[in-house]
Amino acid sequence: EIVLTQSPATLSLSPGERATLSCRASQSVSHYLAWFQQKFGQAPRLLIYDASNRATGIPARFSGSGSGTDFTLTISSLEPEDFAIYYCQLLVNWPPGITFGQGTRLEIK
Amino acid sequence: VQLVESGGGVVPPGRSLRLSCAASGFTFRSYGLHWVRQAPGKGLEWVAFISYDGRNKNYADSIEGRFTISRDNSNNTMYLQMNSLITEDTGLYYCVRELNWGQGTRVTVSS
Image 1: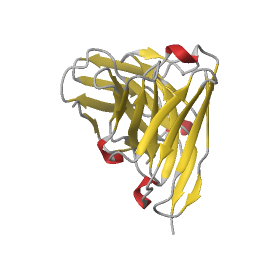
Image 2: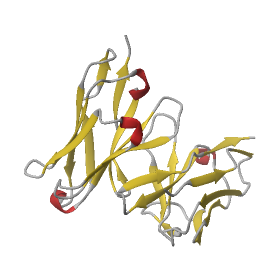
Image 3: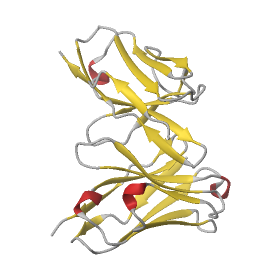
Image 4: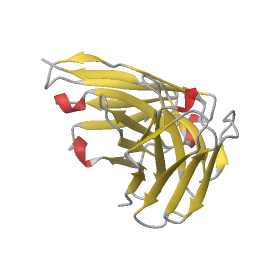
């Protein structure tokens, strides 16, 4: 079973600052990792798929990188609407399922 | 892609509920689907998977045989039959196709 570990658990930053969120897999997952943003009371919103591809409509300040076991989500300059919880996600082929990281809460400093 | 969940509600422990996920905007019979849940204030937890043809199913250990996933490809709908509900089953239940999510349906198990 592949485990995804996100760090930090909470990140306190100010608008305009750069955010760097990490997701580490317990074994290599190639590039098949996605990042989601979730705001209170809303469904998760896809930001990045296949480690580095921005989903449709996602602003350019969001970028993803990494492969193998180490992945990063970077928000280059935080906007007020970016303060939310971020999850990394892996679609598992066999046995079929989905693995999630425990989430990183990005809060206003 | 549109995924619309329904069937949630408030039930006492030990009762049953059946959730539905109505899909549109893609060829339903070609895709495997998942149920994912989120307890209040907690993270995301995968619950169950069903293959495109319904032949292959997989469940989270936490479900312990109480839930059954199924689908009707003629009606573009997936289901989650939840029996012997416990308070720990409380949460928002999402229908997921790969990277596409519905808005969720809320299940509350409480006496």
